Amino acid sequence: MTNLDVNQYYKIKLSNKDFNRLSKYITTNFGIKMPEVKRIMLQSRLQKRLKELNFTSFSQYCDYLFSAEGQKNEVFNMIDVVSTNKTDFFREPVHFEFLSNNILENYTNNNLSHNTFKIWSAGCSSGEEPYSLAIILNEFAQDNTNFFYSIYATDISTKVLNKSVSAIYREDKINLIPLKLKKKYFLKSKDKSQKKVRIIKEIRQKVKFNRLNFMDDNYNVNEKFDCIFCRNTLIYFDHETQENVINKLCLNLKKDGYFFLGHSESITNMNVPLKQIQPTIFKKI
Image (tube, rainbow, N blue to C red; front, side):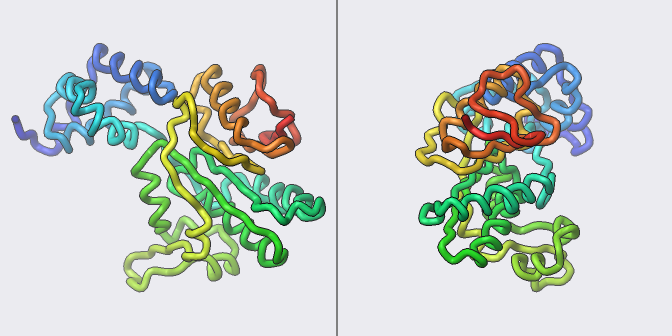
């Protein structure tokens, strides 16, 4: 097998044929839209896989990906580099304020606190969202002794799930978090040069991570949730897929449970069991 100079890998072009094969496969199996305008993005991200596997062309890579060995060993690596994983702690703060000020207050006022309050972070990326939720719920639990909670977090990418479980982040990722919460929930690295922080164990233990492909027919989740956060994930899917995913997620949402979408997402013209409470906040009917 030919060994290329490192820079040569980034000159390998993705042909029409190989782009069409890959885009169709990614859309069909993972729901991620891959139109022509994303060709350069797909090419640049998969060049890393070519380098890793020591392949000299995309046709060689496609042949491997679609082989029995590739379907077993390469598919998850491919989707790890293709899927977009941008997130922050307490992203879209209005959602966390609504959770604290409306949902949790009503939950205890209605004397439901003998149950465990459950949230599903669907499309959790590298863990910032579920850990933000855990901090909000933990703060509430400390003022309400009979309040118990758990968080289930899923993503398609094994790479970001591993990062989520480790719960280690760059220090600058928590710059906007109030100092009181930073001191309470984040541990600084002993190696000052690292500039890393880690979520405390008490919070890490409250979040269960699992791999999930939204395109699966059955999500095999046997719990009912009080809230589902599925934010800034569905924008990568077509309208029909978005509707199907929301309906499947809602099977695990309690009646009158809350569903949160990202700021650029909507349920317009969808047949889903949700009514709008606020922009991007919905209630199951």
